[in-house]
Every structure is written in structure tokens, then in C-alpha cells.
Length: 199
Image 1 (tube, helix red, strand yellow):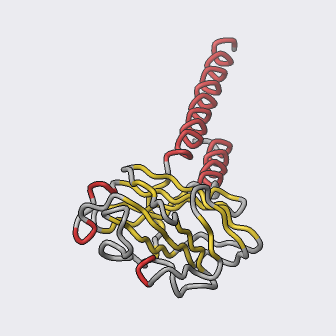
Image 2 (cartoon, rainbow, N blue to C red; image 1 turned 135 degrees about the horizontal axis):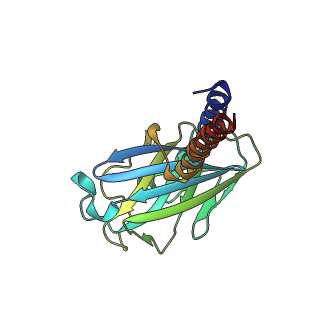
């Protein structure tokens, strides 16, 4: 491979690595939690396979509240369908947020807990600070029954580590770059063959 091709490949690799297209992921009791930095202080939380949870989460059907911490500094956060409380919630120790206050964004669904599905995507917009989503901490308050007042099973309360696998959104960019390198090589080879034939 010629120097130009190597330089182009290196540039593509740097672009791919710096695109921010990496996710954090944690599987606990059969439920997978993934977070992705969307840029601009926005964090996407995905909850997968919740209806097939195991252990003491078996049979969960609702998300009443959750808290996200260790995300840098912020003074506010917003999420459609949930109420944000900067100081932590106050409706009991089982809500997954109480007692965390500073450094945690706490959200509650209130009197109507959110019905779970096997692919839930929640986009959280943080404001008023310098966020860092490299190792977020998550607490969740799952309910089996919409009328209960305390959590079903474990509150999680764990950090979500960086996944070793790039998320699929960045893969087309990388594949396009490799295709361009291949086309460039084919064009140079053809141009060289034409020059030899003309000599």
C-alpha cells in the first residue's frame, strides 16, 4: 500500500475513533442498560429486555423512577414524561433517587409509572455545566404492579462501563472510507496499466 493510502486509512481510523460513537453497557438480571453520548450535553439511556428480567426483577412491568449520576456538572436536566427533581425525590427510600441530591439527576413518573417494553429509549438533556458521560452511575426503581409504593427487587446502583464494541451508527462511515481506499487503489492500478500500454 502506498504512503497516500496509508495516510488516508490512518485519518479514517482517527475519525472513527473520535466520532464519539461508543456506548457504555451493563447487563444486570437479564436487563441491559446502555448509555450513549449524543453530544451537546445529551445522554441517551436505552433499557433492553426488561420484560424478560430475572432474579428479584422477575415480573417487572413498570419504571417508576431512576437516577443518573457521575455525569459531570449540571444544574438542570429534562426528559419528556418524567419530572426532574434536582434535590432528589422525597416519596420514600424505595424510589431509587432519595438521598442523592447533588451530582444525581433524579426523575419520577409520579402517580402513573411508565409501562416497560423490551426496547426503551430515553434522551436526557443536561444543562448548566460541563458534562462527562464516560462512566455514568444508574439507579432504577422497577415495579411489578402500578399501584405499589416500593421497588421490586434491586435498585441497581451501579456504574455503566464503556463497551468494547462501537455502536452501529459509525460503521457505515468506516465502511465508506475503506471503499474509497479500494477505489483509489483500483484507479491508480488502471492508470498505471494504461501508461504502460501507451509506452
